[in-house]
Amino acid sequence: MKRIITFTLLICFLLSGCTKQNSKLTKTVLAMDTVMTLTIYGGTEQHMDEAGQLIKELDDLLSATKDSSETNLINTSHGASISVSDKMMHLIRRSVELGDSTNGALDITLTPVIRAWGFLGGDHRVPDDSELQTLLEKVDYSKIQTGDGTVALPEGMEISFGAVAKGYAGDLLMELFSSQGIESAIVTLGGNVQALGLKPDGSKWNVAVQDPFSDGTLGMLQVDDKAVVTSGGYERYFEQDGETYWHIIDPATGKPAGSGLVSVTIVCDSGVTADGLSTALFVMGLEDAIEYWKTNGGFDAVLVTDDGSVYVTKGIAGDFEPENGQMQIIE
Ligand code: AMP
Ligand code: MG
Image 1: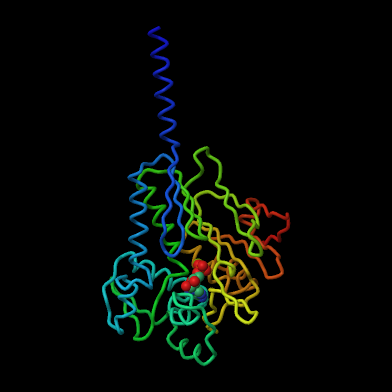
Image 2: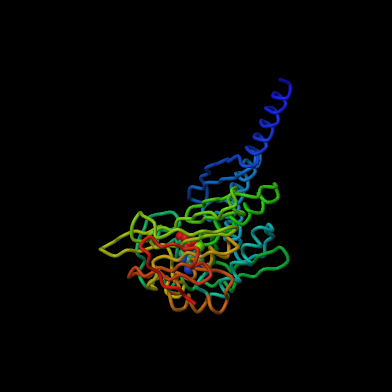
């Protein structure tokens, strides 16, 4: 009898150990104008609360529409050099680097133009060419000056992080979870997905890539320890006089990017890089995007053109399963 009790206690102990190791916690957070879902395995409510606080802190720091944000402080500094937080500094520096490497396709000073189209609060409208030309005079990320913990932005220019903030949040969440000793986690931040490690059973995570032409799925992607970020014209847009105007703007024209791409998914170790590149490659179009991938590397991509063709870079071709079985592999 004593043996049976000892054996039963041992089994219970082992089971509870296993359950704790694999126990799943999920939290939904509304931030950065989107719904965020965090899932961690083997963590505690305390870990999750810290993640929620981190997201709130980032939202308060980076928002272009909150008066008290650091972004707004920079935008209202009238050209003066001001001290900023390490997080702000890092994000500005990385955004400027991505602006350089993408030949300005990503430009975090596009803010006045984005606002004119009504994609930063306010009503959607179609600005005329002369208005856009005037606004574009205030757009040029290379004029942002960074010093030792300081940023100076010329008078009249404004920064915003719609194209990169969620990717950066993904990176910081992965860092936080790692520091908490969590080995397995996945977050969905609007169109961004970022995974830490593998699933608790040791298999890869399945991430659905949305079909830009329907509510369905374009295909399934298997990843581990990666960010998967999609920029799509279908995510935010409005229609006027039979025309569709989406929220991804070509800094060269100030108008919605008409590059022939309708969706760009980037798979990469870094969320902020994936986010910046998903926007920039959408602006570039298929040919320049492929050229960029060949020259720079360090990421993979699923590119969808307006005729429905799907192009996948070779690094993830074996991990991507298109719904209709059709894709072209970029070598
Ligand atoms: P994403 O969904 O990551 O492609 O980011 C799109 C958001 O970034 C838009 O809603 C705008 O706020 C902003 N944005 C649009 N076009 C650009 C661009 N070319 N460079 C930087 N930010 C942009
Ligand atoms: Mg982006």
